[in-house]
Image (cartoon, rainbow, N blue to C red):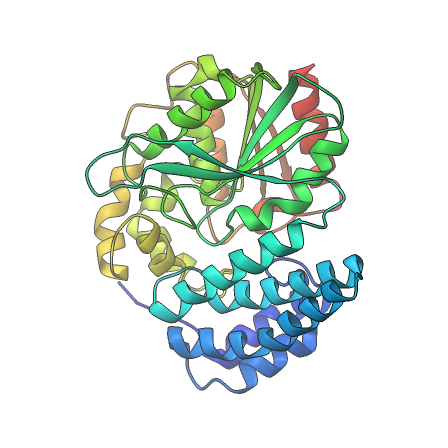
Length: 370
């Protein structure tokens, strides 16, 4: 097996088009921000990476505080989000070093300061979680509700190995404006999640579904789940293991079986994921290295676990047919087993991102929550 990673120059060449457009992971940053941060790096050393981006965030924190002091809420929100975004890049793709972990804490701090000025209010909630020894005691989420008394249908959303709950903002606002409450949370092994990924980490959502069921402002009979990238793995699994709790589930850019084979893991290191894909997956699942991930990953196969031939809740599969992060074959495998499913595949790469993708997901989910 080849443990391959790009150079800093190769990463920047791959990222330039996204940085110019300000699309994930570059929301709220500028092209110049990223060019400056990467220009000072000679390697992908994790703490050096965190320091390079973190150094750019401080002036925006200062500007945010100054704007807030003079009562300019719009400028304060913009500057706090800019600081958050730079700290987000500092911890990217995950918090697998002291510097990156510290950067994530600063990212979260600035995001919550910006959230005070959001047009659609956001509430930080802590959901009690009873786990195993060594695990945390709460699922932390960001709740946003439409105007009025409810009870509202609820979308539970989470990202993958590098997209934390703070990055769910735009999708959450889209659903809230359409009359659906949203809870953004961290999936297993990322952000503030109380547990790592494992063969049975879907138990994380038992606490979340139970929380939704007793809130008078939410209608847990109309509960949807949307997982992005590696989060799509959990969405597909939950649609089978928790189908009585879910009215609709979206596995967006997810994996199921082939992505966990040694052959694909090696191939994906050369794909569209900028760097440390296998290492970032390893970290989310409590492993320390590329080699440990290659050895462990086959145990996560939903086919090998006997999940795929069970009945499932209404499930939408979304991805790009040219995905080099997770194989489109995994989506076809899901279609070949168990209950009939909906699918929309795009002529695109990982996640199948086009101008139609998120509006299509919104339409499909709302139809099933009606």
